[in-house]
Amino acid sequence: MKRVILILLMSVSIFAQNVDLKVKKAIVKIYTSAKVPSYKKPWISRVTRSSGSGAVIGNNLILTNAHVVANQTYLEVQRFDVAKRFIGKVVAVSHELDLALITTEDKSFFKGIEPLKIGDLPESEQKILVYGYPMGGKTQSVTSGVVSRIEHQRYVHSGEKFLAIQVDAAINPGNSGGPAISNGKITGVVMQGITFSQNIGYLVPTIMIKHFLKDWSDGKIDGVPQLHIYISKLENPSAKRYYGLDSNQTGILVDRVMPLGNSANKLKKGDIILSIDGKKIEDDGTVAFRSGEYTSAKYLTDLHQFGDKVKLKVWRDKKELELNITMDKRGENVWLIKTYQYDKDPTYFIYGGYLFSPLVENLVNSGKGKNCSIYGLLDKFATKDKREQAILLGVFADRSNRGNQDLYNYLPVKVNGKKIKDFKFLVKTILSQKDGFIVLEDESNRQVVIDVKEAKARHKAILQMYNIEYDRSKDLRDKNFTNGI
Image 1 (spheres, rainbow, N blue to C red):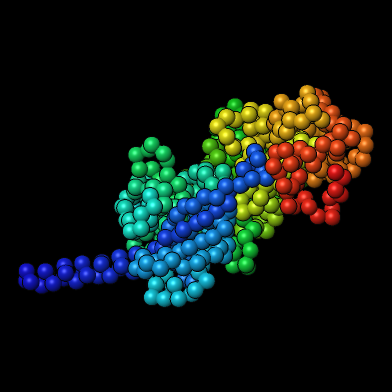
Image 2 (cartoon, rainbow, N blue to C red; image 1 turned 90 degrees about the vertical axis):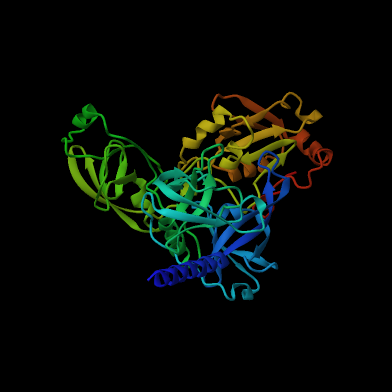
């Protein structure tokens, strides 16, 4: 009898080792060379080298993080059991969800690898194994832990909030893009940890991985749609009585509707959203995504694909009504400050030593200090008359711009009396001014006056003095922008 038990135990052990080996073969190391632009000095960039992890998921594809391959200029991929590095390339990327698909030029890389399957959302306290290549090591690492909780968290790479899995397994730089495995399937992709914490790490859950893959099924990434509204919780009993709700009715209050967003001309300030797609919204702004487990009500719209319709039950003027909202407007077009930019060079324009740029999140969050006047613009939305905020980053000191040389982070709203609609409007207006003066104004009516004749006369000399090759970014070097200098 003891011998039978021993044989059974040995069989289980051998089976476990075979399963573990199959998993390990499907985990790869990714080497990235990237060109990282400077948003404060947008004409220059620096080269970085880093590494991350990924998992083979079939069809000659490797699943990893977007931040592992962001701004990449050259990729290499290495198998667990082969010393050779293979040249890789990006197939699809969602910086919003911090997910990417890559492949290799030489498809023999995938020979003998059994792709990993993508599982379901794990349960709390479910055991997981995290595979990857942390801290630049060449040998594969495996750490174990459990699912601590599941709720909406801010994804550091994009700054957006989506469902995330918190785990207590050890996660370090280099683990990014590697899978967390449970019951032989991918249960999430490692995306970030918390510095100086006691083993707190976060995974992109399979729900969002599947969303990403479905989004890409037509060959392009559209992103995760939103309602584009600001909301408040409705936990105060007095507020509920004021709006005519009874004690059994719950929901969230609409504070603002973005003029260029999906809910424009549909939802109104003061509306109360009672349910989304038939799912009840709690007064604290959460919804049950599983029995006894709650997360942000945004979860219900996150499940949709771009262009889908979402059904809302709304309380307006003490009456209940139903609305269908088509979510087909892109997020980058509804905000005054554009979201994080990757895989592209910053836009800039230099005129007589004055350095202009559109304001984007990369610029707002660059550097150690936060400029309050700029940081506060992150909550502002675009309108039909003002789609983008321009910024005068600084002035290259020269005899032609004396007195303005200490200007920086100046936010013009008008140029020669005209409201600045977007950055390209500012550039075209400046270039169209053949003589006289260019007058900029900010919200406080503070003016910056540029003498056109002096600016043109000193323009090339200023560029040479500061060793700047081009006075504008590549996207502004076409026929649509008259070279007025």
